[in-house]
Length: 497
Image (cartoon, rainbow, N blue to C red; front, side, top):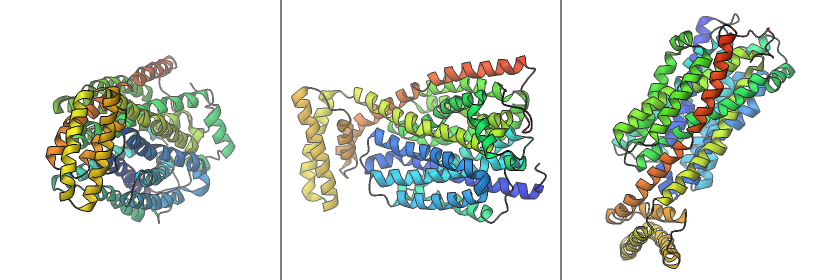
């Protein structure tokens, strides 16, 4: 335990940090839970949804990149005050959004707040528990999947009682935000471990950017983050488009992750961090590949179980590994790890998964069948327009115009235009038309979206193979040196690895 702080004070800070992390994970869960609603209400393509989901990730990275190096100077409490304001403001922007750009902006503000939480709390936990970093970071990160479980169940419960408003679901983010604001914003915080040990800003930057093991760790967390967060971001929308309870699959995955992280002490003591990472890469690859074939609820939950067991230790163990093996990197190293992972997932993995999903979904469309269904839908919508209120009539006319363009394109070319075909079907579904109009369209679009999403999972699997090779080499290197060794901050650690 840090000698400058009492046990009881440390426990209060740790508790407040856990609730702050719950805010970030509730945000992750609720944004994921409303993806399908946003897609329908605002007529978004999978790629646009990917950019909204991606903003919620790479915004986190920007925040970490900017503020983690300043944690020693600004202080952890200051960063948490900024995160509190960001969680409130970002949620309100999304709740009152009128289109794609406001949704994107709100998701980005929330993500910046999420990054501030980790920029402050990861070094806080490492400072509070310098002799038990990997275990305590795992236990702290229990509350990322734990918060997803709470947020996901709350969103599912609202659906169960026929409260389908996506705005109310997003507003759930404010609840833990108020709690952690009350617990933390007036507390006294210790100085970071690096400041207490006299590590200068220059030494911290040097250790972070010139240590080969640190550079390798950055490459690895880009891939582990992609394997964990990329598919997790898409699970609700992909499963729901196939008629499966997507939010419950997400809750199941994250519930297992929370339980396993809570028991991290037993695992770390039996396996070294590099051994844990090696096993995780293998199991995650198997689970994700299996999940890409999940067409029934039983298979979805079984595959999700294997996937959850594989990815549960990736994030906190990577942070613990860096903090224990290259401790002079300090808050900058921990922040940069999170930033690289989120940049990769937000700017590359999530949008690319959306692009792949769009591409493969479109391949599932049978041009003649789709054209016939759209033509029939247009005819029924035209008959219904005089009988509905003005706002609904406007939506119906928009759907008619988009669908007619697709039908005209088919008649001219014998094929269907990419993206605009699926968009036209989404316009019909969200137009307020009768089920007799929307059901035939849903019967085509749902399975196609589900197939495309599952294929996008499969494209992430090869990263697990690359990770398994890297972690195997690190594990064998530890064995050769007599086992995994924790480096103290005053030791020479630049040659490690």
